[in-house]
Image 1 (cartoon, rainbow, N blue to C red):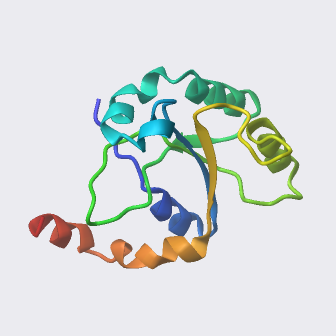
Image 2: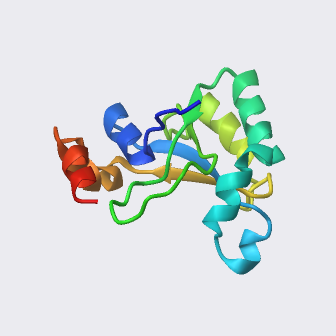
Length: 143
């Protein structure tokens, strides 16, 4: 079934704050660079992705699918990214628990093939013009 999946920068602008999300990579991507075609077809089978979803659900943390930071020069399919509906706030117990689950004390990821990312609102605002009425219609007409 087709779904509309929001870009992570659009989510940040809608929330009016920086946002957290997780991306997933296949082990072979580490050696050969990021192969989009491979992950676009295999994100459903990544056990780490399901582990993150199970943890979020068990801890009552809202999440949704999200797409990459949009670049109008590049069109990519969904690769399994997950937006996590928590603010980046190191004093927030829910954030502390999430961070402890995803990240080792040395800063490495606990789960292989995962990358925990914070997108600041300031960076997301670089694409604020995408929210203007008619922007995507004009973009599609010239694509």
